[in-house]
Length: 269
Image 1 (cartoon, one colour):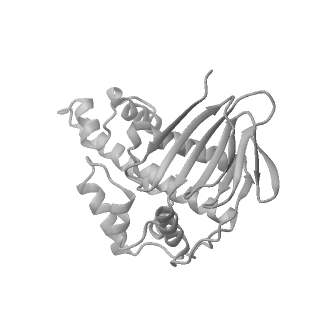
Image 2 (tube, one colour; image 1 turned 30 degrees about the vertical axis):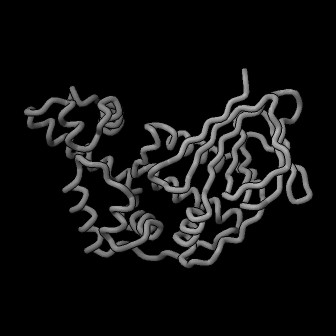
Image 3 (cartoon, rainbow, N blue to C red; image 1 turned 45 degrees about the horizontal axis):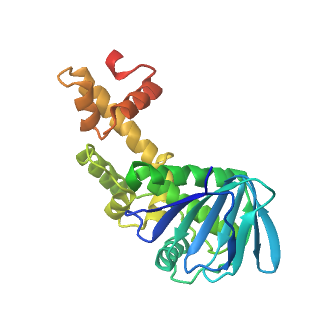
């Protein structure tokens, strides 16, 4: 199979570019980037030199390459390797570091390899989710993105996470519920929910979980399914109309979620 590389700009996350590549012949000479690279080898092994050392990157490893770090990259042995990357612009990196760290301090970046199969698996699933649907970002993907970047920065010690204590106030929680009920048939974003509470996204995620015991996405999906039950019971709407009315624009997704929640498809409710 021939070498190939694909890049995708994510419009809802300005400054983020996703890469997906397969290399069997091509090798990277010594070079550097102006953006921050998160690299994941999914098949095969890549040999990389940086900072006076040589490392082997395979499945389960996460490579972090800061702007300006001189490095190369080539296949190890005779086989090909596949690579998926997140490329964060300096502005996006600084904004995320400030949001997670709670201050405008510049993150302490260094080239590093994390051997963490669980984190690598989460990042790969996030990468795939962001590439689907022409880069449209759901509440779930937004939450995963922020949570995984916080985990990545913490493990690499690039950013010290700000301490977030306490729960949403009763007024904030009521505002979230009111907003979700009012916009249930529309796309609801993490930015909107955090704004309703007057909080940053990172603060909101942690305080919501402490308040409710569920992620915002999981709670919103359940709210939509409960409202769907009420609409189906009236028997005046088709299943497709109910699905769209509560915010499921893919009827097959609605059917799967409904069956998982209630044990039967919507047609049997």
